[in-house]
Image 1 (cartoon, helix red, strand yellow):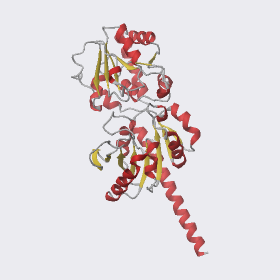
Image 2 (tube, helix red, strand yellow; image 1 turned 180 degrees about the vertical axis):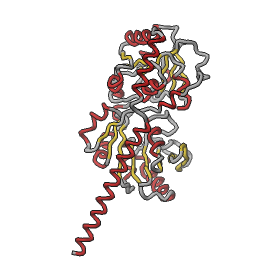
Image 3 (cartoon, one colour; image 1 turned 135 degrees about the vertical axis):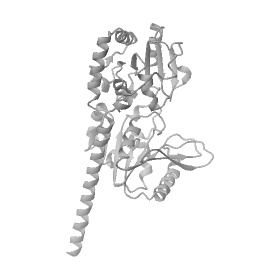
Image 4 (tube, helix red, strand yellow; image 1 turned 90 degrees about the horizontal axis):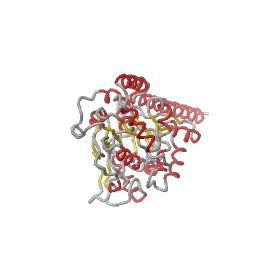
Length: 382
């Protein structure tokens, strides 16, 4: 196998997370083609191609229609784009990798050697989820050779649906986050204590919790780093001590996080968060920073011993107060615990384990094909 063709509901230049971490590393083994959802309402229909990382090429369709995502309205156009690009790039030996079941119809005209479904989220529970998601995921479970899940909760939910489901929780590039030098310019003028969050800001964030923290402690400065999506920005709490800094680059995150006294995971406890495994949890830990999370299952287990857990506004504020009251000795001891916890995982190890599974499955399929050909030859001679 020479190429991985990936269908993703997330753009490569969106928040740098699981797809980018894994695929940039898998590109050391195979060429990666990353196909995004189409850009809508364009003057002309075309396929943009660019390379954001070594070994990775992004294919970004532009369409004149306005239906969001891998919608049925775009299927025929996207199929032609992809078929033509595969021919132009001389791609013949490839596997297909899905991040969203909505792209399944696009594989109808392809002939992959194998199929991977990396189920990083329970997309059916997200806001504005397409109604076809469940049906297309059922098809994907039938056709996939390997299924990866983004955490233990998702694994337990999916493991009975396929004979080869593998749990690969969020990991971290500890070296990237331990190397921060100096405060980030965007928050350098913000006084302390600072309590911060980085990541996507959508229906999974408990805005009432953010508002309650700001109200209980006007002296606290709450820093929110990340894009606001799927929710009305006008509904965000706008107290003077809440700072909405928007999406920032992955390279800048260590400087933000290392400038926070407490890191926040203020997730709402709803359908959209039932199966999440937050990447930011380990990124906070890699910076040696203490954090407070609501009781997300994949945070409580296995990291509840190093992450403070609180759900109500009163308890969440109290947990932050307790962290801010720690002595330097307590802070150092906790940082050592965090370092010990993250030493057990890395994106490098996760990507290599995935690569091994793909390579073994690919070789097995080739061996079976050779055996079938040999048997067919023997039968023909006989």
